[in-house]
Length: 637
Image 1 (cartoon, rainbow, N blue to C red):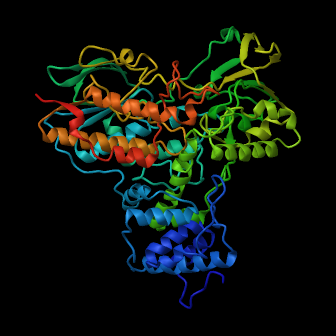
Image 2 (image 1 turned 90 degrees about the vertical axis):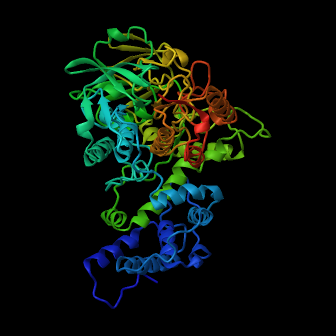
Image 3 (image 1 turned 180 degrees about the vertical axis):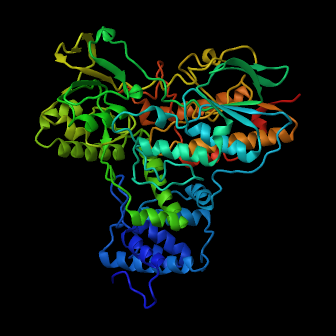
């Protein structure tokens, strides 16, 4: 039956609800309905959704229209009753039940222990905020005002701990302030790529740069962080003083350099913020304009120009389709090949009715976010493990990975259309997910255009306006764009940090071999906390905000317990640190990212995975839920 009319007079709220429920995501409505009515029958056939395909939201649940209509009608009535004052019939399901509910909604198995993180997210306790009794005169420094720095500041503010933020640029936003290239956007749905405690009225399912920038600036403004922040300011040097049990920090700003003391330092400088420019012979002789995607000039006009772009990673894959129709000819130097998944919600606006529903019915927003979390954060994690029984052909690491290869290969062929001659130039010969899976925003269709030339070679040399590829072919361009990525393994490379024994962190990490306990603390460096530090980034997808929130929760719990013991600083024990990193390396050894068939930006010069985590989100969340002081040496005055 269709969504039922009621005999009562429609209010504006009722009308808007009817419209929203009529187009809402059925698997999400089902979960809302179960909690609002307390009726478990909605989890059984014929209402149980079928498994969605790929990264699609599966809005219909794969159910017949009659079944969808029945669910929508019941959900409308339940939400309307809740709005009119009815309590949730099932307000607090157990973690195991929550995992079961998500399993039914997804149409696939979700492990029972995943219910813990679902419960925390639904209850609003995943990001803890409560006062902390810090020692007198204790003050924290946050280096960086991007996503991690904003998050740390909000938690310190809630704790009542004084803090300062220093930011090298002129505003909040970090990555989303700096990267302004055409097509810049997020490859994780923004209803998930957002703080658990600060939602937003997103206009698109996958926001572009301007909206993301506005989000982080809005959150920072709402929490009054500007009064704590010094912009156009850098940390020149930070050294730990064992006598005073704090950090001496040299800070350089518009008014010169000064030295301040801080009880703790939160490094929030990010990972993808130092552009990598490969050593290309003659690059400095290029006769036109040349720039890295992260340093896109405000005044550049590509209209009618012959443009060359080096690279085919995430930045290049976003830029190329965005400018292809504007330039006269586009030449792409793509030495390596990338897997890219279908992108069902690419550039799709969120309907006004759904934006309203998300704002008005928090339970819908929370369950919608949980479905996204499973799809983008953790669904694929199990398929990234090497199967020792699998005959490794170099193309796949297990049967599921092989099926992914077939699916993505078929997709690429379909996208290329009648340009199958390009297949060998774009189809990777390494296992899917060996590099971070990109989302296809039209890349394959773009390289098949007549006004695009794909050169599957590196850019060997620049001679004026002539670009010479590794195969000796020459290409004339007016503008040269470097989409060559970032120094992702050289963490904190922009800072001079000296620890308790006078050793520089750069030396401890041997430049590109960074290690930290839980990606957060390093022996010899008391009260230095590296947000988005070693092995925190994500290779299997999802929102990096989730582990950063977990890191900050952990640090605050650690400090609170240390303060209660009369300590001003904590330093992780070396054996604890080393054992953890052995487990990280062992886990990576059994995963696709260490497969010898390709290179990726996750690995350092020795082949060790430095940038990303081997853990599932809920595993890391569980590791960081409570700090154990037994893992630390306490620095007590």
